[in-house]
Amino acid sequence: MIGLKEKYLAMVQEDLDGIEQELESNLNPYLDLVRETASHLLFSGGKRFRPLLMVLCARLCGYQGNRDWLFSTAFEYIHAATLLHDDLVDGADLRRGKPVAHSIFGAPTTVLVGDFLLARALSIGAKTGRMQVIEALSEVTEQMSQGEILQLLRKGRLEMTEEEYLDVILRKTAVLIQAACRVGAIIADGKAAEESALSSYGLNIGFAFQMADDLLDYTSDTQILGKGIGADLKEGKLTLPLIHALKMADGKDRRDMKRIVQNRNFSEAEFRKLVELMNRYGGLAYTREKAASHIETAKNALDRFAPSDAKDILRFVADYAMARKM
Image: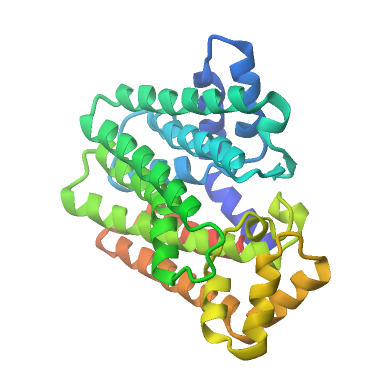
């Protein structure tokens, strides 16, 4: 895993550095409090996955300009805005190993700074001079808001189905990654078939990324995860590993799983018991298989493109997105 991370960074470090510089220089708020609140999350170790994908996809389609790093920041600003809002809605305590923004700056400021970041993303989208980009960013914002509402409506529902789960993660996670890849093709004046292929690549990467992230709630530790173990479960979020295990379990084991899940103050021992049952009924393995299938579909979407460094990196990024999480 260490070697894989080093290889990944060697491939993309120049782009990551360029994106980082643009994020800092284009935040540019009028009030210091806005910068301080936004920076608390923006510069707390985010991996810049979404803007990086936009840059790589633009390059794959032959982008010749010098503003790709700038344009890509729109996706990190949107991502940060939704995290600020989601942490408040979910009552979270930690994000990336740090206290959440609203615990420091208060709920009103945090909400408004999230709004500022969404507006900043649209402003940057306007700099592309392409209405398609503005439409893509606006649609993503709508979809992600509705995804959060869907999750709220289904919060704590033990009868949540896999189809309902997929609908939530489509809107909350996959559409933003899909849009980043699609916008890369748009700013490069890519062909319709190229835009469609990269849209498919991004969508499938998005599904796999969230599934892998959901596994972390049951397989990682707080230092790696950046939030408390079982945090999603304590917030009433049922994800695929648990949904599948509940579907496959019966009798006493299913009753035990439901009892633990329904008790938001479950102990560490109860949580370990839950993970043991999820393993027994294939919840974790099933989720890994589904994520791996989406990764393969994503890589297959790149087949229409000629060999290039950008294509090789995008294929590697697909594998790394899953491996670093799992």
